[in-house]
Length: 363
Image 1: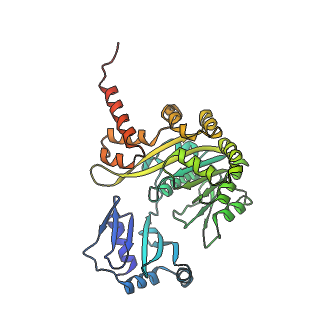
Image 2: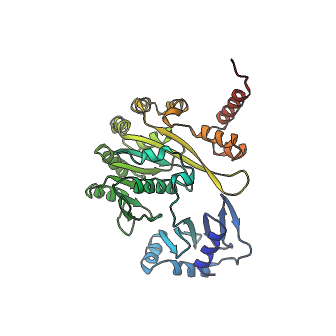
Image 3: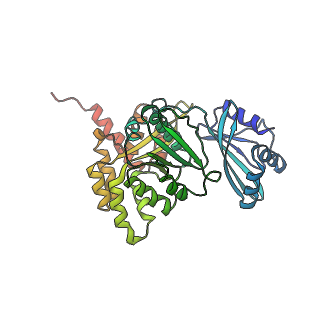
């Protein structure tokens, strides 16, 4: 079977991912669950090598056989774009495709918190979109950039690995740089992006000290920087940024971060209760005076307390978001508990909300 045929079927079946691995039939991830396609033939080395030949250039194959790893984007005309990762396992080739639709869905269509519309229009600062792999961070960032592109006039530079969503200039002018083809590293691209008169810089992944340091400096000097991290809540995100620096620099970084941070959005995807599709739960931390003070004073562990009490500022904890989805009967309690970093706290929150709803009104 040819690669394009497999990918078309994957899109028709509404799969987010396609996995090709020896010796198995193709496996689709649909609504978060892995589903082997037993009506398709089992794949062996020769078949997967043939698929690799179909979807790569000679230069890409040269990189793969030298480094045993390869990331790139692949398009099927009229169907979708895919983020592709190729790796070696037990001497054979394994290929994973992640679907990236051609169309960028809006913040409203995705059900992303409305505050994202305000955040992406900020003139400067640092916004972090975090969550585990496959939680929809790229989709959320694309929706935010699309809103900016339709609303304001800015020079936007993105640094991605690889480029996923493709933007068309509307009110903004947008340059997209692909790690590997257009630049050698996130940190180098970020440093040189500052010389390209940007208003907004998107960093696909803030994974090392130099990238994080440059991003904080860029936010300090009047740019809006939007980046991603693989963290599961806002306090952990703040600690991760600070802990990557040497101990003697951490107090200074804490002070800088407290001044430039604008928001941390943490997201995770859950299967819907009726079994079709998935829904995102969001933790939202917006930098107000209390948040900035806690970051500066080395008290990130207390951020959840502020977030729980700051709904008027657009904040919520992940547990509050999960509790809302359970109450609305969108997701099951079991799925929500699996995604919570503190299942006991989530159950207490749901029990408390239940008692508040059943309590008689006082007149």
